[in-house]
Image 1 (cartoon, rainbow, N blue to C red):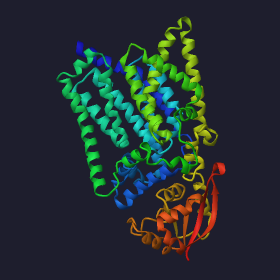
Image 2 (tube, one colour):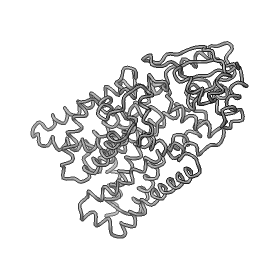
Image 3 (cartoon, rainbow, N blue to C red):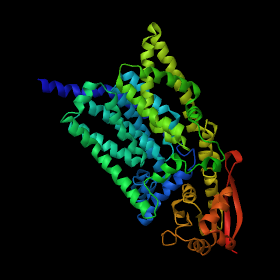
Image 4 (tube, one colour):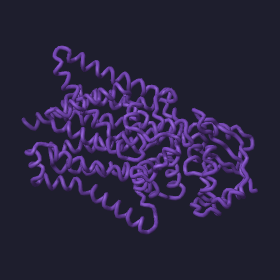
Length: 522
């Protein structure tokens, strides 16, 4: 009789979850609307290069150099099936965002009631950081969704530290690492932080066998993976190669080796408050901060744990990194949303008869400000709020995707289109290919790859590749031309190249223009 009751109650339990989960999936799917509204910017072009290099040359390990294998590996079979690479990449990230909305709901559901958990899912799905980043092919969306799953697995393991939960936690930690090396290893601190903040009696239970054995086993694969990554990076450096696994970017951006990035882009160093307010708005930031303070005083260690897991990396990035991009903050936001909602739920209970009015007012303000910004990002990106750094990256700067759709139309309208279009960098060719038919794939490529597909490592070899495959053309932003000519072909070889500007394509803001140059031997 007891067994029969359990069988009947399981469907009963999940039946009530279907409607909120379906609503969150529907809300998250709105990010598919005008998916290509923002044209492919330089980082997406670089990631598409990894996909094509895997297909053309079998370079499966190349994405590991930047620590982002999942930006390329899942796309290869889709591209081979005929899907447009950029559309497929962005669609996968929207799906990751939809999954993230469901996961944050399930995580909040472990700690609070269904209405509050649903609110956290809605706020996450409407968060402008999430909306604009899941509509770009960037590893941060994958890392964010996987990070929520890690936190959910940690809570479930604490509640029931059996072998099944240990396996799920182990898988989540390894997946998180593969989303973005080495930053994904940050989530290895989730369980130690939980052990530090939880009540002593609960900690003693987890540190006794068999729970301790399962706890160690759950973390062993990710710890061994981290050790393997750092040993491999050390060996590479000792051999005279770059560290790989994203470590050069972590050191360059975080440790100050790239201090000239902001100056090169013509902007000031990013500021945490201004970057958050650009997307969330000041009212939402104030509401969130009040909720976090209230959540910190709740009689529930799990809320304080979430606050630490979110604020620790956010403040570390914003206050101590020499230079950083706003997208780095995305994975820090989900735990803070849950804690802030819980804090406001507790505050509203103290409001007596106007409890519901307080809850609805706070929710309406957050949904109104964030929903408006997210709607602009989807429908009219140029009219949305952007920080100076984001506006430079995605819209006005030399690496933005604006100008490439027009350049593609210009090519398709020419009666005598050139035999080859070369990019001097690793991304412009693939930004352009995103708007050309598949038949152009072998006519547009970086100049650093020879006719046989192999990488050309000398200045002279790249120069001959450019001049021996005419009529040829270079595509590049005007302001970057001279610097890339010198770095690609060597200063001594520039005199052998004669360039004639064919056409220019404006980017918003008049800060940069994309250009075609005809190439001949001088």
